[in-house]
Image (cartoon, rainbow, N blue to C red; front, side, top):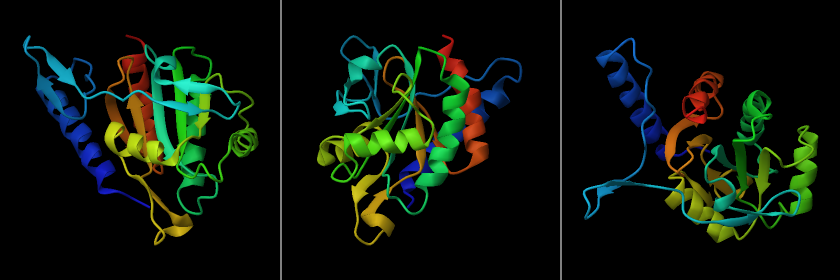
Length: 210
């Protein structure tokens, strides 16, 4: 269940990183800001940001974009009955969780694209089986399916949709998306590839410590 969007964003990140590295081998690489941008009437650059949202996590709490503004977080899309890439993604996301779970300025938002099945209770059980006892760091989110699809495609610029031709009935990318304190996309990583997640683990502190 792949999408061309993840590969386009990966190429953008790779190209930007290579350019910075070749320009100066001693300065730390600044992560790019992904997505469309424009210059407003004041000649300020306005960047693409994650749109407002309200979903429910595995503990039954409402999670809004305000809850993660000012924090760094990683977002992904999955469903609990996914027969293909999701188990790999969650194994890799556990690595991210374990490294940053004690940092109050870091969060993980995993959006279910099958909210009919993935109720709050189902997500709580799923999280507990992964060893996640609370939602202080890692939130498994459910809500209105169409809004989740829209968030995936228009805010996170990734694929999240129903598709009966796909295993499990859904099409989604394996992207892990790194979001900064202003709600901007700063990196995209293939969550099924350990080397890509290694890069994510290396990139998170670059913006977390700012």
